[in-house]
Length: 300
Image (cartoon, rainbow, N blue to C red):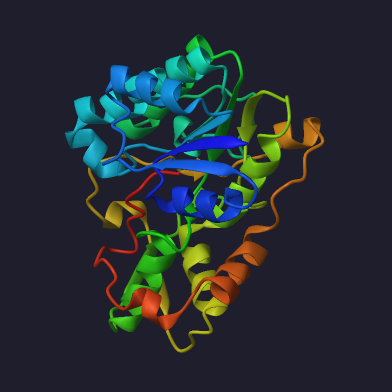
């Protein structure tokens, strides 16, 4: 099977290459390789390689930066997704578009399922929702996959920030009023591998099962990393000055996975344990990015 991957140098892209590499012909495209905002280039590229499946993971994901760079965010997340959808339709490829739980306003007390009405509170979530609508508009065979609080071995994320902060000997303050479903990017890549072989098109919430607060997540990270003697201090969101509002609740319920009788992702705690058992090495944090762990920074 020929599989094109946009955003291949990112967190999910890295694991998609690991998971999909065996038995498939991969065409990974980083931002430098393919600017998804260039419609002609996107179409020409797909017409040249004629992929069977396109996994569209390229996106502007920095939530705060999106507020200041609104046009760029929409150009990549919305118009770029339109371009990929048009290209997929032209070559008859299945399209898997990676979206986010940030399409919701977070006011619901229970987890969000695929039949809840989106209402994003920031530019990032709104741009990803616009991308969803373009995919539905221009491509016949699509899977929209929303995920939440993704982390993995590639790049900077909440897990790596927490451990980096500890290794730097810094105090850890984490918000306790934001809730989500921590999702291991390798597990998400494995779900995508299963999904792309089906004809069960539509919208999916794909996150590791369950949910927690950022504070609970931080404590679980330290436990999974076998780091003891470190206090995690819970604070409210207004303790920090962030440019973008985040939804209070982005816990996802994977109803569509159940309805389509697909294997669910495992519990988030089990996935976190596997991340540290399988991917974590001390050298991974040798030169970490110094960003505040209380600010998730990026979407999903």
